[in-house]
Length: 316
Image 1 (cartoon, one colour):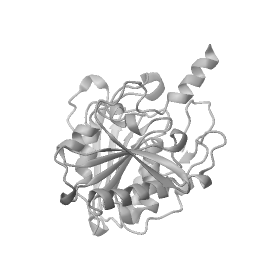
Image 2 (cartoon, one colour):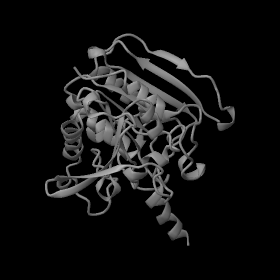
Image 3 (cartoon, helix red, strand yellow):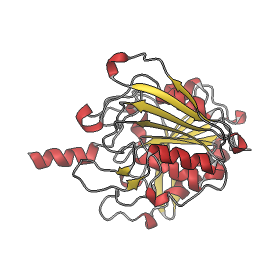
Image 4 (cartoon, helix red, strand yellow):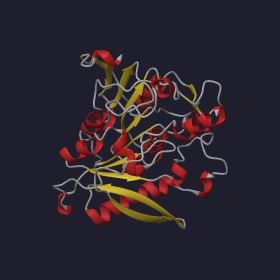
């Protein structure tokens, strides 16, 4: 019985969408073949969508073991309403084996080889297809994600910089595997991390499902990641720091926003520090127990915060 519980947790612990209910919204599913592999992604078009209006696009990347089709559920159904009210098209891609090749390799399922699966080409191909077929504004393309999807959005910031205006990883930072890479251009980034994340340590180190488990890749601290992007974006001056009002005192969390805005090409570097927060999407659902993934902060709606941040930026 103990072995069963361990296996069950390993399979589900990084999910943002653990429940099996169908998606509460209609998503259009499309396919894209990359190097002979047929890949799937799902699209949400806002109700006022018009192909002639050049709408902004956000790629939303599920966590390891999760599914794109259930991303919105994992945010307590906040992500699609946030996109709807802002006129943004949201795309939810599916990773092969429910994983992303985010630069690390230790987190991959046994037998998985990222040299045979080109996630970068897949995500860039989605952008190309959305621009060509639906008139998406190529200057307003963004990426967010949680955990493995958050790490993948960091990789996109470094390697697909010219196609994205901004990224917003949640419960993720810069991995040691990508620490020597630099983006070709400045790129805006908002990192949303909980200080008490039991899986992805806020202060850096090894990503682990259990304290005594194997490493799933070494990562820099959240603060070191912010410093790297400040350097990449040639930011000067000190941060503006705002402590948000404690609107939900019973959840045991508090939110501080640290912003660097005096950067090249009008790029911003922002840290949303969720004091007491866990491996969770703020404003989302408690998809597993607090003992396993930590606390879900209800102080902010991360979906709205991230999309508002995105809409402040565009590529020249």
